[in-house]
Image 1 (spheres, rainbow, N blue to C red):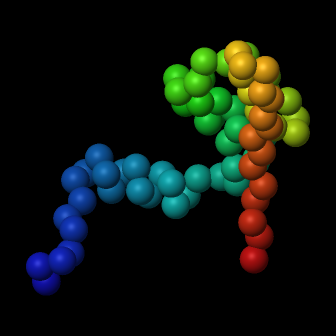
Image 2 (cartoon, rainbow, N blue to C red):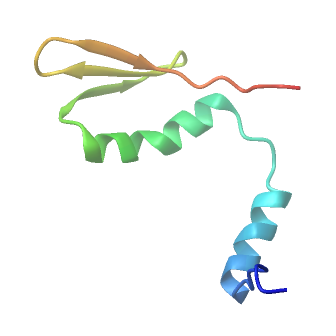
Length: 71
């Protein structure tokens, strides 16, 4: 079958870890995403229990939230 992808050992291990991973909570996912956002935007950042607050240098303010979709 020519469309089947063969995984490297490392890719297969990462896939299995992802499948077996424990429950991820929104606040934990926000904390993991924050460093990535900090690399892209020049702003002041605050991680709160409601989300990530971006206070931009031009005076704009944003809140990034994550909500799990169940069902």
